[in-house]
Image 1 (cartoon, rainbow, N blue to C red):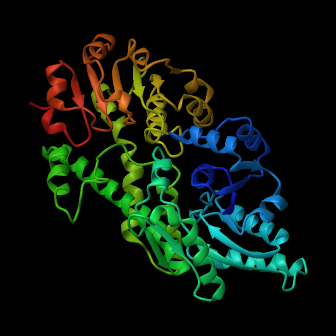
Image 2: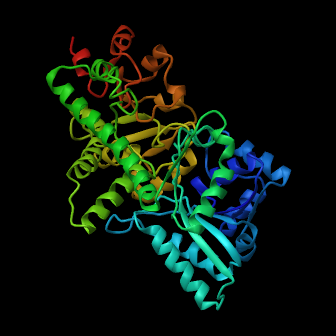
Length: 457
């Protein structure tokens, strides 16, 4: 099938490359000429395991191309996927300017029938706004009878760091469409597109457009809720002498609960959970409803990002002048270089504001960290940040090690080397990577999240 993808960001690039891998003829449009030039030269603007090989292979086969030519992109595919960004607006609502601009561009150039597929994460009612923007452009161009369309909602459920795997082996594919003739025609086209995923069992979930739009927000809100719930319990566990890891195993064994997203830590970040929780809250407020649980989820998460820094202050005092800390992990999660809403950014601001210096290391996100920290910090603070060459290099002469991101490379370190490099054998583990008993045996004082009961004996 001929498919057009509008936007070559995280969702658009993964979607385009994966659909090309399935044998489709994919045209990826982006108005950022520098990004298109990078992609056409063999580069990749984001870090995602397996994506570079996928793009290279399908570019070489001719099934995947990148361009800034709007007219050519509209002419290419009957299926027009909108996969542009929906950043949070000032009031927390999703900013739809890029989605609506994409719709207008399609309407301005389209001929014949098109299925407009909203792949971006958008609030309920967006399909109707997209349709109105399309109709306005079609009418303005005087294309009476020459152009028709329907708008479909097909939200993405991709985890950063595992997006290629998630797309090619989905647990569900949600599609919302209208029940009229155009909507049913779109259903058949989407069914054909996703047929390769349905050979073993049915993965397509059909519903109306508004329900599909809502499903994406509901899923992310539920996952964010589980994370914040466990973080609140972990903070209480530290106070009452409970091992949160034992609790996690105990409640996760209940099949009604399960183990996923029950890990206590330093808070969630990234491009999805923070903005989607805010956008769903904003949608509720616009309909005179207060989502009390989600408001608490967001507040707990913002509070949780301070916990690691507070543990450091409890150990070393409010004034950290002259103290030097090693920080392992800067990206908001492993297998990505995404620094958006990353807890490490909050931690570094806490430490530097109290006069400390930092040596930071991340296996992938160093370049992106340099960029965002230059925006976060003033010149004096930035001068006290050293970007280490390796994880071991970061430890040199540090008063303590602070772990913020659970990279696999950090899971089985040489504890003797850690102890030898640090001024004091002290580790603050924001992701509970290690067992306290193992750390005690290695002669290292250990502070996890919700595991203080095991460090007091």
